[in-house]
Amino acid sequence: MARLALYPGSFDPFTLGHLDIAQRALRLFDAVEIIVAANPEKKASMPADVRAALIQEATADIQKLSVRTFEGLVAAYAEARGATALIRGVRSACDITYEAKMAIANSRLCAELETIFLLTAPAYAHTSSSLVRDIARWGGDLTPFVPPAVAAALRRPYA
Ligand code: PNS
Image 1 (cartoon, rainbow, N blue to C red):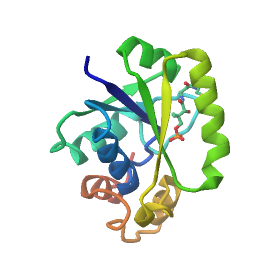
Image 2: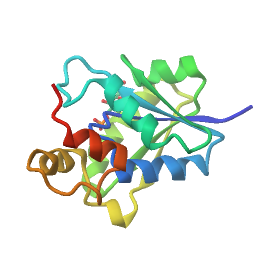
Image 3: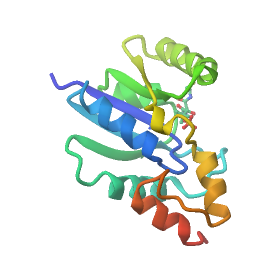
Image 4: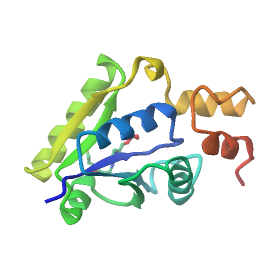
């Protein structure tokens, strides 16, 4: 049976660090689905379908990688999709407390679901979506941080 891993996140926006994690996850699983959280209570800079479309554009040439939006519990979505694992990137020890809470909650909600933590590549350890949004706000060069499709979108003012 093909092993599917989900890579959930806000991806607001999707960075080169996220891209690296998705590509490395593909070496461990038969297929990876990036799932973009559509959380009506969390104010994102772009709607989930726009974030997902940009990821789709940035990853179009990668086989076995798909992109969807989702709303609700990630564990319920994983169960419905028959996914065996969740992928999360960890940049440093500071991320672990938050990540461990989510991993434990998700395993309580779906006992078969393993969260796999991949250490962010050193080149992207200091990249975060909030840092990218700040650089974009002030018109800085985004090329070291995000795929070209995302950089182009961030240069356009979002109405
Ligand atoms: O990129 P982020 O913001 O760290 O991603 C957080 C995300 C979307 C993975 C998390 O908030 C999530 O899983 N939300 C869906 C709701 C849910 O399942 N909550 C319980 C998990 S603790």
